[in-house]
View (cartoon, one colour):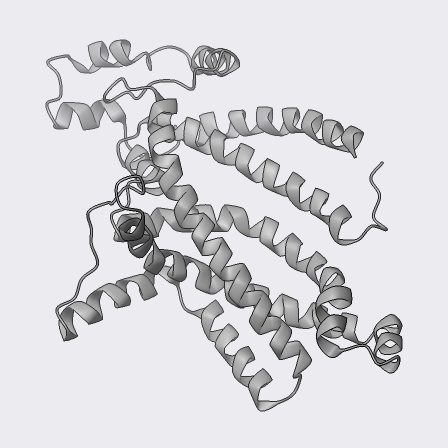
Length: 314
């Protein structure tokens, strides 16, 4: 296992190098120019060329890329072109908020999806199963941004109730912080929960039809013990794969939800960096997300060996 992990970590290098090429090139394809934005806001008394030189974006693209990569190698992700703050500091402030939102959404999605999927599989082709399957299809069909807009708009119109749009830090008020995050986390997890439920149901049905399950049932093993001790681990393998693939989807979903619910996390930071054409911060964010996705995929592969001891890594 140790050699496998080291081998995978080494393979991260070409992936990260490729991402640096793509990120550095694509952020400069975005229509608009940061110099034009700054001049429109009268942010300085410089001319167009003077401002380009001051920001360092008048240099050849290959030189800018090499300077950026050299800074990464020394632990410097760059500085904001607007306020000269370190990109790493901005990410450090925003990251706990996004992790809390996406983490709560993932926990809710896994909990609801596994429970409902298992119930649907053990009661296959019953009215309860049809009800759960219909709900899952609805969950997959409803866009998160549309649902978030409705849950804010309708209570405000009908009862004059609106959620708090002032961020409550967890260190100041843990209960208030969790209440504030519960609604956006639930919306974020609905679509994922629907997918987990369908995968869990399909996988559990397949496992329950295997010979070793029939043998255990014929020997008089209790149904709950049969499901949760023997069938569940094997049924979870495809679900774990789906969870790993959901990590980038959850992170991207926070961009819209953090904007709607005014949460100052990575989503808002990403959107602000795009609208302001703040290249260094946007590059740092995408690079950071790349590492999160790579390590989540590695964690999924390691989880396979825990769920099924027959799986070995070379």
